[in-house]
Image 1 (cartoon, rainbow, N blue to C red):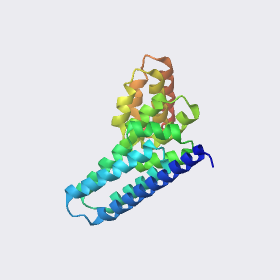
Image 2 (cartoon, helix red, strand yellow):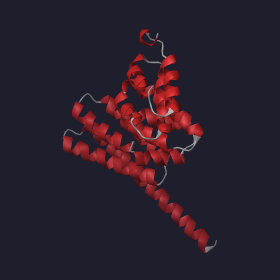
Image 3 (tube, rainbow, N blue to C red):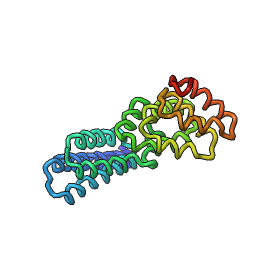
Image 4 (cartoon, rainbow, N blue to C red):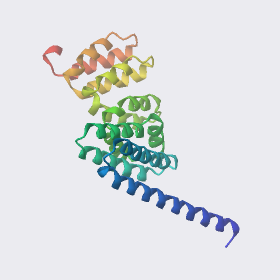
Amino acid sequence: ITPKETEAIRHESEQMDRDYLLLSAAKLLFELLPTEEALTSFAQYARNIKKIVDIKVEEKDISGMMEILRRLTALSDSFTDSERKKVLADIINKIGSIENMRVIFKTMTDTNAIAEYLFLLGADSVPAMIKILAESEDRKMRRFLCNTLSKFAPENMVAFEEGLKDERWFLVRNLVLILGMTKDARVLKSLRKLAVHPEPKVRKEAVKALENIQSPETK
């Protein structure tokens, strides 16, 4: 066995030990959270889980990160205590940061897995998704994001309104397309504003979107 092979084996062994320690730490924290009565300790445990997630993302261990995110969302759903739910919601929101989302979209190609990540994060991830949509140069991924964002749009118009103010006409056009895909009358007010947008391609998409929405207001 060569020195190079020996070094590779040592590195792999160290990585396995590290993964085991992180897995054990996460398991222990998830066991402590449901029974912890002190809110300050509960919050500290949750922050420690977030640190483990950060390591997983940094190492591009997306499957490990996803498993922790699934457990966090399931745990949050199990609580009726609003303070504890808020602590976990804050941690989940941070897992959905634009920095983490960029890693996810660069690392993963399975759109089903990415969709699970986005839906686990929930509506609070919409602003970050819109930023990724603006940055993406992959047509397939932009189409995927448009489809995903259309599921969130009617209930999250505040985030969309901010995006519609963007100076990049191509982003605004895509957001108009998304609003049209919803076929929901709640987006009509926003679409009407875009029907007089200075960019012809945005105006055209807005008119098309308005035509797709069946409502007494559009007749």
